[in-house]
Amino acid sequence: MAIKLVEAGFDDITIYEKSDGVGGTWRANSYPGAACDVPSHLYSYSFAPKKNWTRKFANQPEILSYFEEITDRYDLRHRIRFGVEVTAASFDEEVAAWTLTFADGVTAAADVVICGLGQLNRPFTPTIPGLETFDGDVFHSAEWRHDLDLSGRDIAVVGNGASSVQFVPPVVAEAAHVTLFQRSANWILPKNDREFSAREHRILERIPGAERGFRWWIYWRLELNFLLMRRNSRFGAFVQKMASKELTKLVSDRLPAEALIPDYPPGCKRILISNDYYPALLAPTTDVEVSPIDHVTAAGVVTADGAEHPADTIIFGTGFRTTEFLAPMEVAGRGGRSLNEVWANGAHAHLGVAVSGFPNFFMLYGPNTNLGHNSIIFMIEAQARYITHAVRELRDDRLAWIDVRPDVMDRYNSKLQRAADGTVWVAECDSWYKNSHGVVTNNWPAFTVSYWKRMRSYRPHEFLRRGRS
Ligand code: NAP
Image (tube, rainbow, N blue to C red; front, side, top):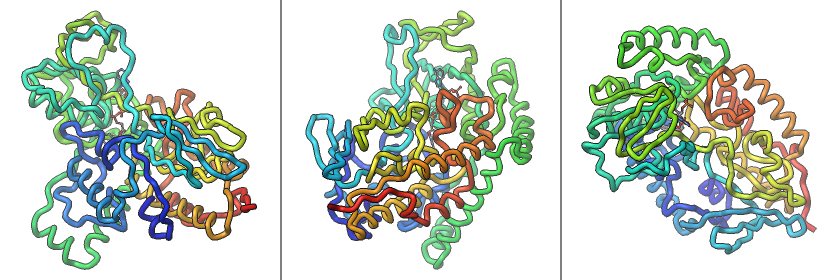
């Protein structure tokens, strides 16, 4: 976003960042095995390709160093204020300016506020009776304790989502014993991953258009996976049948069908990819527990069936607070209206980037822009381009503020929710794609190419425009 604004001629840009470095999720999630499940040539900026990714699905350190390198290449560091947490933002209509308040009480003014907080930045740890009495180490996958040596430990892992599927194999390799507490099974497909050869690197680096062609090939291949996300999709039924057949071969007394085969269609929750997860579950030192956790004692975890599972370490791979979006930041728009109130029944926005009543306020990776089938970087680039158009309009037309019209936002969201009703996400499964009312607040319910097309045209008539007095 900052790169695009600088390119559009804006210079007075400050980036406030809570942590001490760039990278966001790729900085926070440094657990063993962390990698991206979207091929790296697509999980990178279209305007800053990296031709020498070491493997198809890069590991976290390589992804983080890509973002750090981009920060330096585009000379962004002097614009970033690290270690600054924004706790509140309020709009003053009189002066058409936002006031940002930081955790230390200091404030700053801004004409335009753009939030790039992501949907997965606040770790979620469930409240379990007795957890405070546990006599060992407890941590969340997004706050990995690299200072702890896990070798020889007796580890309880809670949760089996995208993060756990990546960290469980290395943890099993190190620990004396692992008990995986699993609430529901996931659809996990093979990961077509490997290192690139020197010859492939030469082709990607030297042949004009090779890297671009490879990127587009990955894009369209992933784009087709949206067919899986449609409710009652035949493609989905086929994948379900084939995957169930393979998983049935693994069923045993130690690993019952319930632990392996999901009871919901593929895509309802994120489809995971891994080659080492099932081997880790089959290891003699691993137990998969499907009875729900009842409570924790000083010495371990007790499940609802009364069984006690000794542990000296508990790792929560229980995901993030995903449907609260900008929380705990307090955002107040025109007339002091709170964004929390506007979103009481679920976060929603126009195109995922603007909310009516909150002028000159934009979001990246906001409501209904997450994907289950393609690269989020692609969506964020479309948003950055759109927001740049809007901010350019403010400058060029000498406007005090623009605010998306409520009827435009409502129409957009009615249509979007109708489309979401046609997806597999509304099927019977718990997922972070929807809020407690069952409203799909996180995902974009169509092909990404349609989002890209829509985001190419910034339509001024969709906004209320107030001129400078
Ligand atoms: P997640 O997908 O939300 O998984 C959380 C896990 O914790 C689920 O297995 C869930 O069970 C379980 N859980 C939650 N509350 C629980 C409770 N009270 N008791 C027992 N189990 C509980 O979280 P995540 O694995 O951190 O992944 C979140 C998202 O991050 C992913 O969907 C993905 O978008 C992103 N991610 C991406 C990558 C990548 O490669 N690009 C890697 C990691 C993460 P249920 O399923 O039964 O609810």
